[in-house]
Length: 79
Image 1 (cartoon, rainbow, N blue to C red):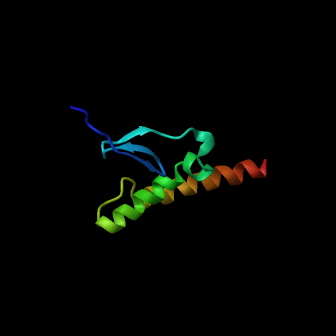
Image 2: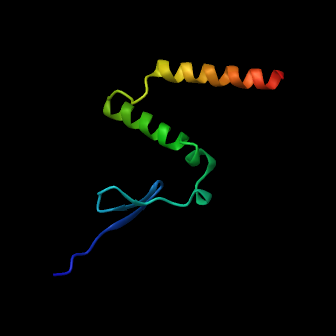
Image 3: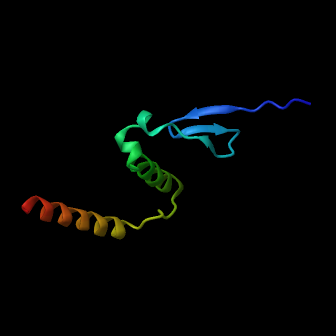
C-alpha cells in the first residue's frame, strides 16, 4: 500500500502532515527579522492573545532585557 504525504510550504519552513518542521529555509532566504527571531516572537505573542494563554516570556522580562540592551548601546555610542 502506498501512502501519500502532504507537504505544505509555510512562512517558517516546510511542514509534513502537521508533524512539525521537516526543513527550514536557508538563512539567506529569510528576512533579517526572521533570522533574528522577531517574526517568531510576534507570532507567539499574537497566538497567546488569541488563545488567552501566558507567553513564554513575561512582559517584565522583555522590558528589563530592552533596558539592558539600551544601556549597552548608549555606553558603546559614548566611547
